[in-house]
Every structure is written in C-alpha cells, then in structure tokens.
Amino acid sequence: MTADNELYPDAQLVEDLREWMPHQRWFAAKGHTITGVGVVLRHPLVEEPGFGADHVIVKVSFDSTADQIYQVPLGFRSHLPEELQSWSVIGPDDSQDRGLHVYDGLRDQEILDRYSRNLANGTPAGPVELHTVPGSVIEPGLRGRALSAEQSNTSVVLGEKLLLKMFRRLTLGINPDVELPLALGEDGCRSIAPIRAWIEAEVDGVRTTLAMVQDFAANSADGWSMALGSVRDLLLEGDLRADEVGTDFAGDSHRIGAAVADVHAHLGSALGVDERDASELAEGMIHRFQAAAAEVPDLVELTDAVRARFDEVAALGKVRVHRIHGDLHLGQVLRTPERWLLIDFEGEPAKSLEERRKPDSPFRDVAGMLRSFDYAAHHSIRESEQGAAVESQREFRAREWAERNCAAFCDGYAAASGTDPRDSDVLLRGYELDKAVYEVVYEARHRPSWLHLPLEAIRRLTAR
Image 1 (tube, rainbow, N blue to C red):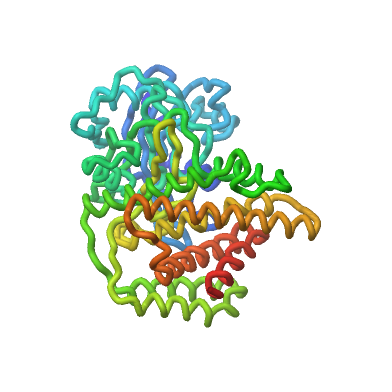
Image 2: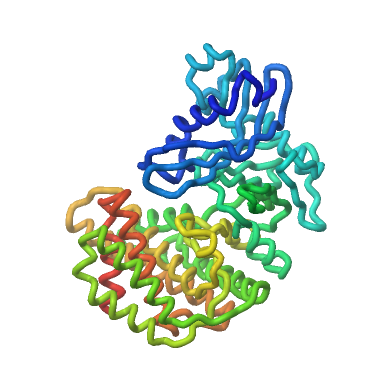
C-alpha cells in the first residue's frame, strides 16, 4: 500500500490532520484557529499489501499566532487491529468509505520495528538522515513500545535498552536535547543518559533534529513521583518530623543537587563560560513580570516589591553564564540504581530556539528545582479539601518538608561544586521570583485554584 497514491493524496491528508491534531496532547496551539496545513516532508517507510507508513512533517498556520511545524508519522491499513483503533486519525465511517484506515504510526509495533531496523542498519530513509555517535552500536532486532503517557513528545522504548524520542513540534535547527547531551557525553559527564544516535532532515532549508536515541534508564523513578510519595507519607504521620519519616527525601535531594552541579560543571567545561551584565538579566525579568501583571491583576499590588528585588539583581554587575538545562524541575531527574540523572534538555518549549541556546546563569536551574520542591510539598494539600485547623497543620508540615529538601539540595550542590547558591542570595532570589511569575501566568490560565501557591511564594521572596 503506497501512502501518497490516489488512495490518500496530500489534499486529503492535510484536511484530516487539521481536524485531528488539535486534540492531541502534544499540540501546542490549543485555542488558536488553524487556517492552513501544508506538507513539508512526506516519505514512505513501509509499502506492503494492505499496510503502509509515511514519515510526515507538516507546517500549520493559525489566525493569531506564528506558524508551527509538527512531525506526524502515519500508518495506513486496510484493516485496523483493535489495539490501534483509539489512535485513528479519521473516523470509522470515513475509513469504511475510503477503504483505508489512517492512524498515529508511532503506536504501531510493526512501524516502530521499521524505525528500529533502520537505526540498527544506519539506513537513511530518503531525506531523513540517521547519525550514530562514534563508538555506539545499536543492536538489530530491538522491539519498540511507545510509552503510554502522552507528553509533548512521543517516546519509544527499544528492547528495554534504548529510548527513542520523536519530537512532535519541531524547531528549526539542532535541538538542545541532542546538542547538550552530546557535548556532556564527550566531556565525560555521568549524570545524563548518553546519546547514541539522532535523526535529522532538512526542513525549510535548515538541518533540523527530528528524533534522538539515548540509553533507557531501566528500573528508574522520576524525582516528582518520589517527592510526592515522601510528602504524602509525612502528612499521614501527624506526630513525626520530616527527618523521622521512613521516606524522608532529603538524602535524595542532596544527591540531586550534586548531579545538577556535575552537569553544570561539564556544560561550562564543554561549551565554555562567559559573562553577562546583570542589568540585562534583570531587564528580562522585569519585562516578563510586566507582561504577567497585565494578564493577572493579582500581581499589580506586588509590583513595587518585585521591582525592588529585580533592581537588586541589576546592580550585581557581571554574572557568570554558560549553557544550562533551562527547564529543570523534579520531573526532569531520574533515580536509577546507580545515580541520579538529568533528562530532557530541550529547555522551555515556549521560548525560541535562539533563547534556549543563549547562555544563562546556572542559578536559573537551581531556582527551578527550589520552586519544584515547593510545588511537590503543596501538591497533596491543593488536591484535597480539609477543615481550617487541619489545613493549617498540613501547611506547616508541607513548608517544613520544602525547606528541608531545598536546604539539602543546596547542600549537595555546594558539596559537588564548591559554590553554595545561597551565598548569592540576591541572584538566586531573583531567579526564584522570575520562575514564580511564570507559574502565576500558567496557573491563571490552566489551574486558577492553584494561583495562590506562586503568589504566596512571591510574597515570601519579596519579604526577606
């Protein structure tokens, strides 16, 4: 079955995707009206009787935001197995009328096996190029399974040994999630999952990262889930302190701090260290606050206090900067049987590639982790309804947990790097405020009932 023959012409493909993509978890322009979809790349991967697959990249235009480029590998079958029916791009009536089922190809075992085989053989798929890191060997015959959780990208485990991450929304150029781990691996950093291969193609005349393959961290647990378990157990123990609960997280927080410091040291070593004027950093913070205050009225009364803290940052003179993770939180660290690893080096998806690749202070990553501890501490409280007295007591315990783990993280960072972030209180507080302002906008848009959490953080940070 050929995908781009008269059975499924481009004109029909783009109309179907126009209807289907806005309902996908990875679609980043929800709320915007699509005005057009155009095929950027369409290359056949499988052409067999009753079964086909295309590697597809499309550019989507909108009424009120910039164009976006998406990667949507598609499968085609004359008869669709039951396990693939929930991933259909077109409805059953259309499928019956056309005699063709169209679906998300990354959910099909046979299509994933084709990607795995191409990676093992180093076989290019037409305009789609495969690159293997020197010294790395990808075994043939690794069976693929897509991870069930729908995220902003789609991840596939190959043979329980490798992780293939297919980037859904593409940014023209090399993705930092490939660039940074490659540099870190070459520099000998052990606090990451090494890159083994990546896939790229020319998109709008620019060499662009489509996917990456790295070691799969088997038997691992993410920091967010572990932290939530620790907080939950603490809140269940009414008469124990955080350090007395069996699932106390402080030891892991210390080790996470050391892992972050290790990554920062290697990023500086591999890609160089520079300086930026603190006034430039503060200008960005002030600009983001002004935009947030225009959207969230609750911030207006805090303007003077926040501006005073950012002015303190501006007066610091030169600040040491280098490439950083850029979107660090507890969900971006994994505990393996051997060590903690940092993952997902893409940076904040809302930022342009140019912004994400710009050197910044490592304190941005530190601040992201400290804010994540605060969120983990209060997650269970926000998710439940309690009486005022119980709520007050739970709030006290949550704050105790957050302070303990923030301190342990900073202790670990200081032990590994020789630099304690708390010694640069003005800069660290500035980055924490900047992150909390970002959180205010997010909560106002998506979870208004959580808005008070970053607002309380801003009041606390400006009251010091």
